[in-house]
Image (cartoon, rainbow, N blue to C red):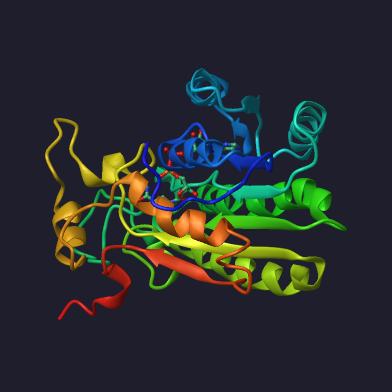
Length: 279
Ligand code: NAD
């Protein structure tokens, strides 16, 4: 793949969670192409292995490590494997995350006349909590385990926020609140770790079709949903993004030369979505 930026990450030990998924597998491959030694972490061991295999087949360095980012013991075990096989972590990408139907309403606005659907009043707090845990607590716990390696050296942490962090999207109160917390955590941690030589930033992707949002965007027979129409109308570039279009922002923020004085930013990559008022 031709990368949009040449960033030298030679032998940097890079841990990326959710790396069996659509966006983070593209990140993992790009990191390896920049010379990083990549630990491909995912709860889906098979998906992680496939990504690691794709990287090693090209002659670059990667290992697959199964992990549940919500389980402290699992994270510790993953850390031990990475430390033994690759060394201490230089770069951490907190990519595991996503929405879940348990934190989603069926309606965009409440209408008392409509019955038989899941409204805000029917949301199960446990489902909402799961989405917060997956996006916020997982990033926090993973950072506690891996960023300790960076203390006394230097390091780089990148979180994945979202458009719904700036303004909530209808139907997904849990995911919107969770990603707002991810942006806030990014700023907090950037401040906290700034004197330790560790930069912390986030990218905020606009709309990219992946496993975690496919059901909201397309019907089972592949037709765009009404929501897809609204998203594209609210995106000045009038299309979904492609995963490799995140790579420029992603690699730029990880580049200790080009982004040496940048920490605590949440960089939108969104075809103009966050800039457009809708009018
Ligand atoms: P994806 O579903 O393709 O990938 C998510 C990956 O996370 C999966 O491989 C999954 O197995 C893994 N995962 C889930 N729970 C885990 C856990 N407990 N521990 C470890 N791994 C776990 O989705 P994606 O769109 O590629 O998502 C990547 C990140 O980008 C997520 O944080 C998502 O919220 C964010 N994001 C996506 C979009 C988009 O439009 N797709 C937009 C904004 C932000």
